[in-house]
Length: 328
Ligand code: PMV
Image (cartoon, rainbow, N blue to C red; front, side, top):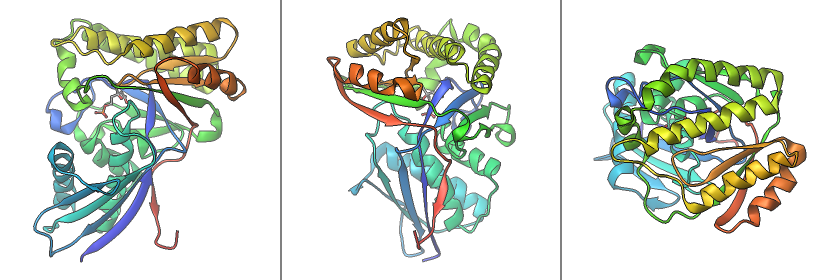
């Protein structure tokens, strides 16, 4: 055994979305900058051990041996860590998540942020947060944001060395609530890695990219001022623009289910009735409903009563990825 470490990270919800890469897809260099909130209460814990007696990397997710694409993705990520640390030996990785995987909650963001931290520590690397953010990005683009807590911006950059996240505001700057309406998945969705590759096929993607600096600034400004109405406007527009690109790609990507639209409609009604709430949707049918804490109970009960909503998870801005000491 050479080195062992543990780390934990939360998923994040993008307010301004990353969709599409530039250049080599393996580098996950975002076509546009993005802003997100790192979430508390949901988390992924990763334990890794580099062990000279292993013949190959191993992965267990929630106690189950993983093979196929998730093992292949973990192995190619670990190759980068081995290269950085000049290490030869394989590793055994154990990942545990307290929320559903692949249900529109950035599970890969939490997993790769935690894996970046744990694997770099176990390999003896002492990386500063920006460097850790770049490493996490190689596993899953959005993972670079989960290294930091609170409100986070991913500066797209044009090369590996410049494409990394940074903290905008701490978690307690604005204690918004994310109510995640989990919706049943009827068909197997296309994962975001494949989805990013389709973005350039949409004739709407150039218009979306051209307008991104304006949306980023509107979003930063709304967060800085804690202006919910301004935030709602830009967050819903950004989500709709990303889904317009997905819908108009070849082949077309449709992540929404009928219940997704029911939630969008409900959010519009609740807002008309005075609730500070807005929606945003990632690459899945579930809907993140962001609201001010004073409206969370009303919004949560309305969501739970809707047909097609399996359950409602609740999270708030939380801290970034962190190591777990054996004493913890
Ligand atoms: O990091 P990935 O490859 O899982 O892509 C994330 C894509 C979205 O969740 C749809 C948007 C985002 O910025 O998180």
